[in-house]
Image (cartoon, rainbow, N blue to C red):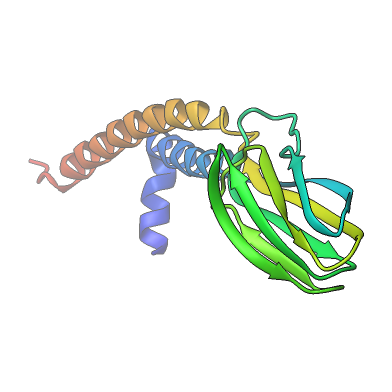
Length: 177
């Protein structure tokens, strides 16, 4: 190992190439480092006895358009017994029974759209809705371009340095005479 390090240190071009390749690898790792965010929107509505609704809840707004959504869910809680129908774009997502002071979560499969709820109630009360979206962004992904450029230069320097090193070793091994 010491001999390899000694030979590399003699070939400055090879050393620069290896350092550039290591720097490119570190830049590439940094470029895919995620930054996680959680956005939520809560809503409270009064529900009447018997039939109630429709109630609509919009997804939370997020500032970053490049948010890659990993999870979205609707959490419901009520102080009365309810039967709840959850719709999106006139399509029934689910029907569930929500008992007093019990919480239920509905997985929305990473979708974000306006939800509509209606149903029946055993008595008048309140329903609390929490619409949560979890996701991440890659704020440093522009470093991937720099990593590619540095990797190309590193590969060129490393190959050139390696060929120079081989040429020098071959020259040293030739018999003098």
